[in-house]
Length: 307
Image (cartoon, rainbow, N blue to C red; front, side):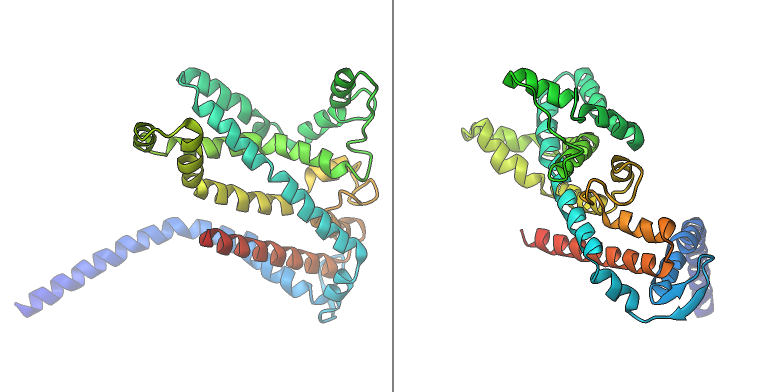
């Protein structure tokens, strides 16, 4: 009887392991892709950052932390870090704008009309980044740009603001493009969060005499916390990885024209990767960027858990 029980247990255990093995085979292709395309290149980049590397990718000699010292002592690299942080924070304006937009769309009771609005505001996310930049280069140009023309008509005098040519205003112009591009995505995430809030809470608040403003302040905003955290963290990460639109706005140059005001960390790394090849320096820059993003994300997670 004991032998039969043991045999039954072994048989059950074998079936369980076999079932687990089947699931592991489904995960294996994804893990292999991550290993080959992400983990191994990342480890190589960290290794290269401590070496002088030739154009064909061969390690010439070890330089220790010299690449990091050169980068951190460079005023251009420090300026690119500052540009990236400012641009990332300015782009986060898409979160509150997207939330307000989502509140307006959520108030539309007609489902067909709501679908039209959702699709219409999400359209910029479907358009390629290059097309958006080319459109906004016309809209934001100094002479006869759409925004300057509107301002001129409103104020009754000719307005010539260099949204993309004045170094003190280029970040504003670039942020307008980024906010417009990501507004639809932020709206969609906020709308999903709004529609997940139980209607019973609003009904109970209405019975207690709460106004629409109080319901919005004490029910909607607190229950949207997780959506805001998600959008805030992903927005910061996306801000630190901006390259394409800034590169085109700079005249297809990684120098961040005008006067380096649009040069992000990725554009600085691009210089050492393709324009003035020094792969050890480029890898050191990539490691520094990773550490900055990792630190900012960790702080965000810690702070948002405390709120």
